[in-house]
Amino acid sequence: MPPVLLLLLAAAAGLALTGRGRALTLRSGRRRGRAPGAAPALAGPAPVAAPAGGGTWRAAGSRVVISDELALALDELAAVVGGEIVVTSGYRDAAAQARAMIEKVRQGGPTELRIYGDRAAVAALLALPLDEAAWTAQIAAWEAVGRRLSRHQTGRGVDIRTRDIAPARVRQIETAARALGWNTLLEGIPPHLHLER
Image (cartoon, rainbow, N blue to C red):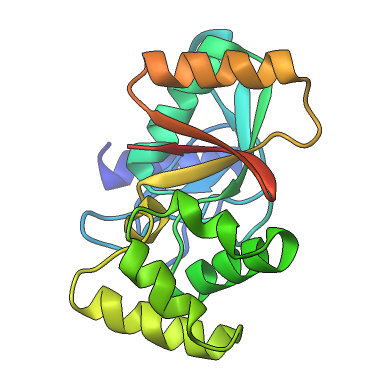
């Protein structure tokens, strides 16, 4: 959309165009877009309308970061399943990845990290003290050489809240996500459905 038209639409909707040169994606839930090559856009807690009268999705908090590509895929998923989908995690930097992994260990023990395919990396982290700074430093060092533990670290993974929805609804979302090309993993600690592309 041309910048002039975006400015007019934003003004008409009462939205402010702010942010370091980022494009604005106009949707009913106000979500900032991103320029190509920029960090993933921040999706705030407001609901984002899905296409054609389907459902909606929203970020669980202002710190959940969703790439534009996955935002469109979530729009599509919400349109198929209807109702509301709550995204609890999106892009993670090294510190956020460390926090997520440490929380799994604290709540369920080291075996909770078996979901990560890089067994050597998991073993190396578990050899460190259960300390966020130590884990963050190690994960950041791996990121610097292109080694990632999760699709969250590349902006290609999201977690959908499941703790407060019926099992049938979880299955519905999981089935629809797979049909739309997502890889899925139902996790118990904390309860969520992991989706990745």
